[in-house]
Every structure is written in structure tokens, then in C-alpha cells.
Image 1 (cartoon, helix red, strand yellow):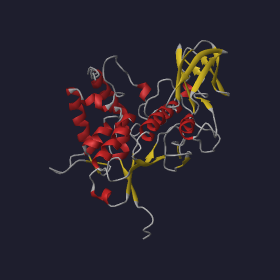
Image 2: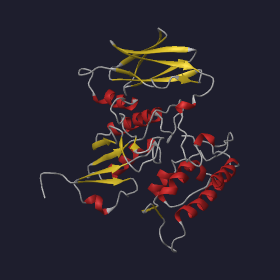
Image 3: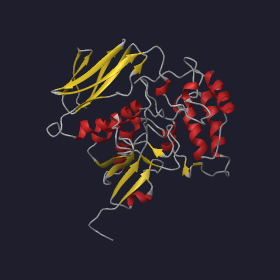
Length: 356
């Protein structure tokens, strides 16, 4: 009605690039969660490159992206663990991929603050969506908040340095990775008063490998700005840092893994790259998607199973895909089902990574 305002649409990942309704609005955006609800973080930038190459005259943006984090911690973050460290990694990757593509008309982080969501039961705290860069009470800025500050705030306006992982004190490894964000060009890291050297980083993300012995005071310095925290060497992982999902049939860290073999923690893409794994997956898909009429296209949560959707599903671990399938496809797997499947996967050799 108001011809001075542009029209837009927010399409979800499963919507195909050639769907005709994308031709209707003036500009288009997609809600993508590659790296959280499936797929890999590395898929985001190339997806937008493909859209731009396919529709060079349609302005394209990202109307939603994000992942959840609570006060859980790890030195080996994985998709779906709800740790502050995975959220920080995810946003580092998304910032680098989205902000460097100048053809994108807008990007929208979901979300600035954790917010109420009555039906939600994720991450160990019900009734909230925890994709915020800041906690719901506005009292704690998660590490990912400072990743954006490093990119978006000029050092002439507000120079700063931020030491990540302050809530992650107890660590088991002998050498631990410490991350620092800053909008200044150079950062120096001190451990118990001794310098580990200076680093520069064009992407504003600085990484240091720190010897983890006893108790250590860590101080990051950029120009005259400083930030500090502590780490402590422990023999066993502090279980207070790990989410144990109540009511979950299995947690990912409870699964038996055999070195060099597949498991429920393997990515679907790995599984179906093997013949035996592909046969197992075909049976699973039959159970998840149901029989349907002959010649009828398979659908998941109302969406046609397209190559794009399959690509996203390949990024899920087997466990996460089957867990989510219960809600999306009205199909449940018992603990016994999953343990039996894990034994089958343990018999399959993990495929060797492809050489570039």
C-alpha cells in the first residue's frame, strides 16, 4: 500500500532458491541455522554465494541465524552442546562469512537477549530461548557479544579487549586454547605475569595456546586496555560445566565409541558415505518419513526432502537427527533402539577424510 517502502520475505532453509514466491518481494532474506539445527557453519557463506549467482538481481540477506548457549563449558565444543564456547565459535564463523559478503543487504542475529519461550525445553533451563548474546536478565554478556563488538565498534569510539572463557576455570588439558576479542590491532597475553607474546589478527579474533599448570592468572592487553581471568589445572573434567539433559534417552557423551569406527555421534554425511551406513540410513528414513503413496514425494515437517535439505541433514550427528525427528516427524526411538543402532555403527570403519 505504501510504495515508498520495500517489501520482503523471510524464508526458512528448506525453501528452495527457485520457489516462485521469492520473485514477489523487493528484497529477500533467509532464516539459516547451518551449524546449529543441522549442516555445518561453513555452509552459510557458500549458500549465499550460490543464491547471489542464481539471482543476481534479487537483494539477499540473512533474517535469522544463531545458536544457544548457557553456562556450560568445554575445550572441545560441538554442535548442540549448548556451551558458551560453541556459541562463540559459531558466531566467529558467521561473522567472517556474512560480514565479508558485500552483496548482502542485511544480517540479523537471533537474538540480542535470551527471551521467554513457554513451550521450549532446551539447554537445561525450560521456558527460554537461549540464543541471546546477553542473558535474559541483561546482567551477563556472553563471549559472542564481544565478537560483534570487535567487528562493529570503532576503536576511536570505544577501544576494548575481552578475554573469553572467564566462567570456564577448571580445565583438564596440559595446554589450553585461550581466545581474546579486540577491536585493536594487537593483543599481548600474560600468564602469571609472564608474556606469551603479541599477536595481530585482521578478523579481531586472537588465539593463544597456554600451558595449564596449577592455578594461572591470565591477562590480555591491547594498547592500554586490559582484561583478566583465571584457569586451574584439574585431573578430571568438572561435570558442573556439562549439560546432562533430563529426560533425554541418551546424552552424546554417554555413547560408546570405538576408535576409527562410526557411532551415534558421527555426522550423517559420514555415515551415508559408506555403503553399510547408507543402507542403515535408508531404513531409518523409511521409518521417519513413513510409507506414503507410491510416487509421492517424501516430506519432513511439511517440507519436501530436497538435495538442499539433505545437505543440511548431513551435518547432524545421528543422535541429534533422530532426537529431533521425534518432534518433527512424529517418530520416536527408544534407548534400546539407539544402543542397537550404535552397535551396528561401531562395526563400520570411519571413512578417511578426502584430500583437497
